[in-house]
Image (cartoon, rainbow, N blue to C red; front, side, top):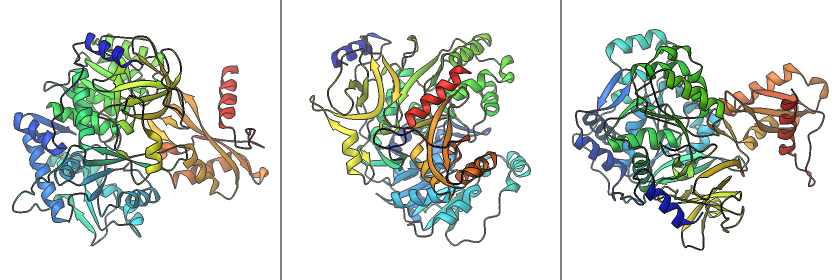
Length: 567
């Protein structure tokens, strides 16, 4: 897409400037500035307990001093494996203050996955909840991990809520045995003097988030302080995020959007963040009723669940002024149901689509609040450029032609951790002299600069907004002695976006049936995070092959879609 056309469009609509200014500071300093502006304003609401901006920065300072005492310093890595809670967020910014790097992973990762992440990041220090101690205890052997900091959900709750949590859930958490490697969050001691903020350059590495590729092997995505700050300022400018806003942080902090947009962009803007540590439609619905957020974002499955929640049919939803759907294609029926619910309950908000990927922190384009174009993922945020290229090349295509979506701008990652080949494949210099991120997604753009997502060049499944990499699941299935061939695909599902389905050829055909299917699903659940596990297994006598002898997953998807159409 012609750059001049894009910038002219952006300058014309919505008073969005053509370019923005990004302060040459680190993430800690950016939040510190918000705390200096609004020391007594509420920064965090967590299960009804609150932290002001002054208390937030004090907590970050104390955490940084304690982590420094445990040996964390410039360039070191700390693995953070928590749900969206104050401890995980505070540790993220404390690491930034020390010039260290936060490696963010899913708290429900298996021991095998945790060990891989610890090795990749070379983390000597990790933070998780007591609930997940066993997985880390199993994973740490043979890894660089030396110290494990354990937090409790109740650390930031009032005495009454702490008791309530203990009676309902806390007492069910297994006791942590005596372990010399364990330090407790509640017992961390800050030094007599606050740890000094390390000198940080904007392009220094701030965090590692994880993705996968066409092989299914996880890749560490290296994101800088500049990446996070640019993303936060771009999003805030686009939606008008400010001090009067309340952001409902539904997506988890190991997720790029959850960390960079719902947490960091909100903090940079001085907004209040309502943290949701455990997602369920019922919990989100209650928070919509009681906390009256002004902005939220999530996958289509969130809005589908909310539209069907009976408790919202009597709620006042007029506070919502912006709601964005990302992580997967938004079905039109889901949009219509959610917007109808909001309209019935006094609101005017439109559910708008956006687009992003972790390699560019999170969202890099979205629909303007006042605009609607069916099927469009919107236009790039200020300072982010997008174009469509002939797949596998740097040749740009004209409007209307489908090709690979490529993006360029200050939110684009530094590269993949210890993977120069993958970095070179993803980050390419075009004829204009800019470095462009080749996303692996297929789409097109119209004459006005609106983009449209059509399919994925990479073989990847989006289930409930999370990435599932079929090759990784297939590798686990192949570990089972009965599996001769396996192919995992994503099947369209109204509730989940896509559900994971495995096609299997058993080497003992007489065993194929419901009992073996259940055994294979259980086998996966022991080794993979639950989002990656097949929801169903279908046995075949043989799987379709391409002309070069590879299993033809495209043919399986087409067969499945054809069967669904006939039904």
